[in-house]
Image (cartoon, rainbow, N blue to C red; front, side, top):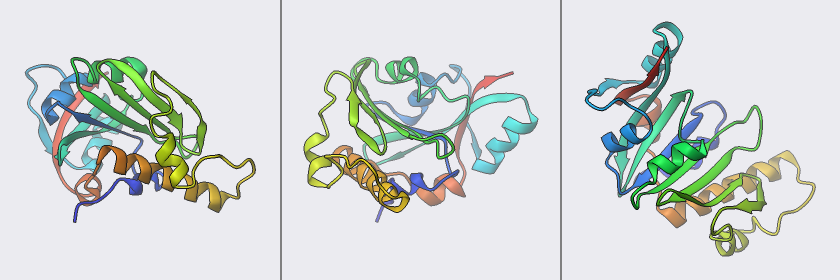
Length: 196
C-alpha cells in the first residue's frame, strides 16, 4: 500500500513539497526553476543537504511520481510556497498543491492552485481563515472530519490532532501520496534550481 502524506507533519523531515497533476516530474522541476537542458542526477536527501552546505547551491528539487501526481521535494530557497512559484507550476491547466512546513514558526501552510490562480489556501490548524477563488472548497470535508468549526483554545496534543486530520482531508480530496522511504532514504532524480 502506498504511503499517504500525513508523515510530512513530523518536524524537520521536509520543508516544502509541491504536487502537480498534469505535469510530469521533469516538467515540474522546470516549472519550479530548474534550467532547461539540465539532466537530473540521482541523489538522496543527505546528498542535497551537502550540496546546499558545501557546493554553493541555493535551492534544489528531488522529483518523482505517485499515482497521477508528480511531486517535488524542495530544498533551500523553495519556489513552491510562493504565489508566483505555484502560479508557474499550475499554468496551462495544471493543478498544484504545496505544503510549506514550518514547525519552528507555525502555521505550516497548504495551498492549492489551478490554471495559474490560487483556489484555496490556509494555515494548518488555522482552517477557519481561508482565502483564494474558492476558499470553502474543503469546508464540507473539514467539518465532517471535526476540524471545523475551529475551537479557540486547544491543547498542543489536540492542535496536533487537528493538523493531522486537516492533512488527511487534503490527502483524500486530492488523492495525494508521497513515498516516505524514497523521500527520506532513497535516491530520486535531482535538479539544481539555483546556484550561488
